[in-house]
Length: 244
Image 1 (cartoon, rainbow, N blue to C red):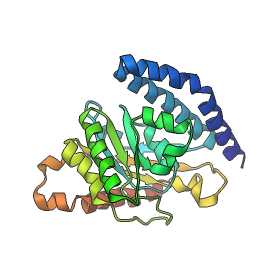
Image 2 (image 1 turned 120 degrees about the vertical axis):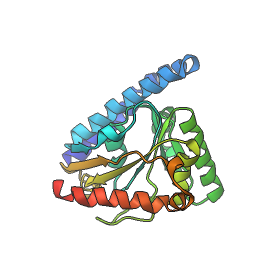
Image 3 (image 1 turned 180 degrees about the horizontal axis):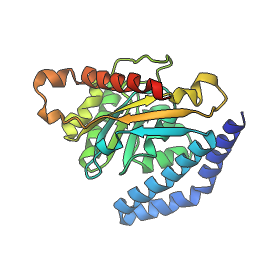
Image 4 (image 1 turned 180 degrees about the vertical axis):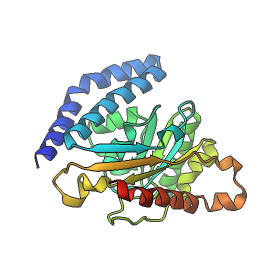
């Protein structure tokens, strides 16, 4: 329970102390958006690393060399834990926005940092609004911002299972003309979700698959892209189970 208290205290303290930084970031963005993007990335990376430190998480990373550093990408991953965001965001080499559920936009202070990081908020109940979010993500990619999405649509609460991947998520890579990077995350739910409210010292394995260029695919492959990526993530996931 002490880890939960430490993480919660760290997050609350960071959000309060960072209020002046939010103002500084807003001013910087008025003059140079690239500097703001890089500084916001560095600040939040530091905060997320602090959370992982207090959580006692050990991370093994495989295939990180597969992630291009010179172009934006679409990250596609399985989703079992809120910690998936912290675990993967601390690895990104360039500004990256996450697609999150719209309820997170209502959290004071946190929503400001999320917007600074180009996060987008998805209404899962409204197809029209959901399409607007996907279109906004395509524009982000075209402007040089990477996007991360968990296309199961929600946190999967069952170990070693996968929900179907929503096909619309992959339009971001197809229409944004960016590489698609599959991510397999093992054991993240053992940090927190599997034994609420305790945070447990845990070993997590993250593997990045090789980039997928949808522009090189034929029509049938593009139609089946959600299953293709799901199978690749499943292969990495079950291969790495023995490492956790």
